[in-house]
Image (tube, rainbow, N blue to C red; front, side, top):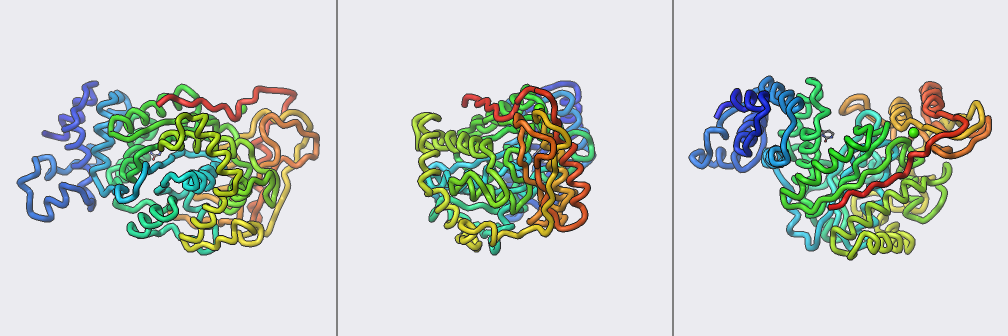
Length: 466
Ligand code: URA
Ligand code: CA
């Protein structure tokens, strides 16, 4: 088998076999240290158990050419599943089998003010469903769950494998950073795609996302595919195609997988920024309509409950999504979800009093600046991407991997799409720690469109069947 022939076959529109894909991806991943069955066999001197492919290397430029061939020619469902499996087996996987029950995971394709995980994880745990979650950091205009959690004093997301499993067994929820050895082929391939204009390919995105979910070990995976101007997928057709591709991969590879399309035209929550989002999540867990800086977003609460309903159903805690929604609502309103949040924060070394006094215990910005409407009318647009960029400009997000972030800063939305405003009304507030508030306030102002009327697009949920 030769990498050259595999590239040529895909270039000419052929369908690659699982063996060819595995040969190529494992050969590519070998360029840097990785741990898998093959590496273990090599280490133990059992090279005879390996075929030629396992000793073969695929270069970066071959992988780049192949990625472009895939971008242009696409992949069948079988090829996409084989690609995902090859990526998963390029590294370590998490074995959650010591934990009893159906372990669930949720993945969002990335949005602005998407605080669902902070509410959903303790809520679902309080329903008796184990959530063993590996999350990521924010990049660009989207936030990351790990960064949000780290704004809680003392909380650590660096959990050993043993501690992670023990915590999920004990309180049904743990959120940790992804270890470096999880899906090394994806890390390498994504870096190449990023500089070769091959990111926006459905099979490549779907396999990239799903390889990380599969490696993280959950039995049931729920995908929250964002659609709209603040999302990766700008229209419903593309989002549906991506959702279907990911669901097909999960189900082919033996995991119960479902997807929900949710709107990402405007920020989902009213808070955009790390500590601000934690405060909004706590307010929702505490069944309050307000947090210290303004009202909570009903959309954020609704989407979280819709996700929880499906997880309850997928985990066998409810006979239907409707029954799951009822269970999720009663668990939230009973205070059990907030109590589970306290235990979760304490288990990871954080100050659990944050659940009762977020305003005093979370980092506070020194500058709070309102953004006012220059004229009256109906809010017809609120560009999520622009608000996310404004928050990142303030220091809430990163331009580059590894950049430091300021947990206190961000943007709080007061007027959403469909709201009627008068001239001078506060549309939003900017929370800042330096003079960047001025540019951010201008950007937030520009993100709004206020007109005589318009279509309200937010909140549309289009659940896809399993
Ligand atoms: N997110 C991922 O994890 N992978 C992609 O390819 C695109 C978005
Ligand atoms: Ca719109």
